[in-house]
Length: 150
Image 1 (tube, rainbow, N blue to C red):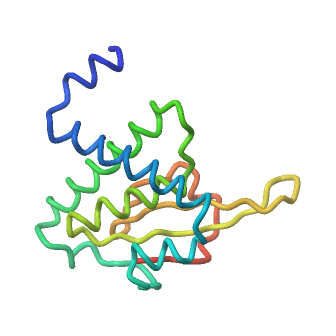
Image 2: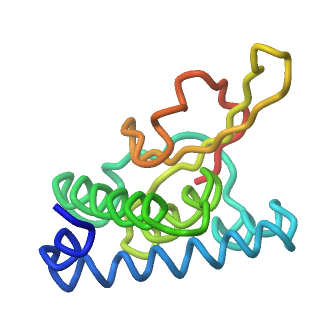
C-alpha cells in the first residue's frame, strides 16, 4: 500500500499526532544545532535527572499507558522514516519524551555509548516507558547506558 493510502487509512487523531511529532522533531533538530544539550534537557525534564520511572505511576491504567506509548512510537517513527530530512535518535527521543510527558506518561531518556570496530566512540539515545523501549530500541542493545533523564 502506498504512503498516501496508509495515511488516509489512519484516523484524524493519529494524523494530528503525526503532525505534532513532525513539529517537535523539527524544533528539537534545530535546538540541538544551536542550544547546549544540558539546557534542552533541563527545559523539558525540569532538571529531573535519574533512573528508571515506573510506568505504574502514570495517570491512567497500564493499558492506557501502553496505548499512548505505542501511538507516540508510531507517530515519531513514521514521521522520521518518511521525512526528507534525517532525524537521528536524539531528536526522536526528545520528541517522544515530550509527547509522552504531555499525555501524563512518565518515561526515561537513556544516553548510551559504545566503541565501533575501528575504536571510534559512538553515542545513541533511546526512550523507555517502564521496562519497554519505545524509541531507539533497534540499536540500544550494543550501547552501555551512561546517563538517564526522567
